[in-house]
Length: 156
Image (cartoon, rainbow, N blue to C red; front, top):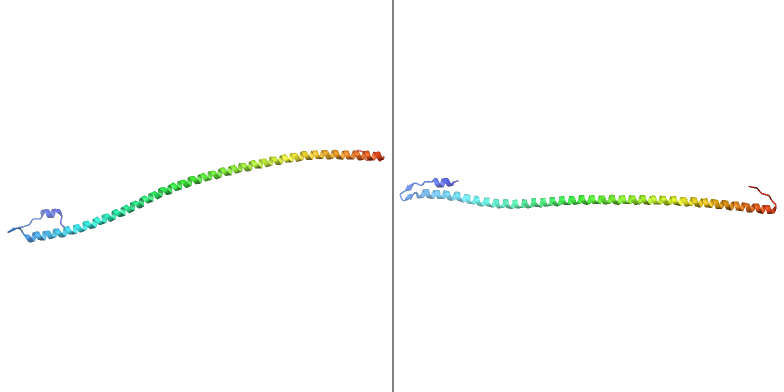
């Protein structure tokens, strides 16, 4: 392949009418073939460059999409973590409130049961006292009745 230096250094022999026509024609043919090859190669390289640029744009878009997807995924993951933490805290808070309510209800029930017991105990003592009084009164009445009949009964 010819270089610009080859073309610059090329010397033609002088003929009668100047340069030898055959040498000039031969050299021009050589230049033309080399130039044609370079021209074709240049077109092919430009096509390759265009294709590679298109592929590069495509890969850059894919990279950008992947980066955006990664950012969205990270953001979503962070939101999921935050929501999970909030839900866990809410569940714990509700559980603690339910536990407090259950304990308070149990304490209130125990207090009510104790109060009911004390009331029943008092009522039983009142009943016992009244029943004893009734029995004593009935016994005295029977004793009086037997005494009036002249029958002496057990004396207490």
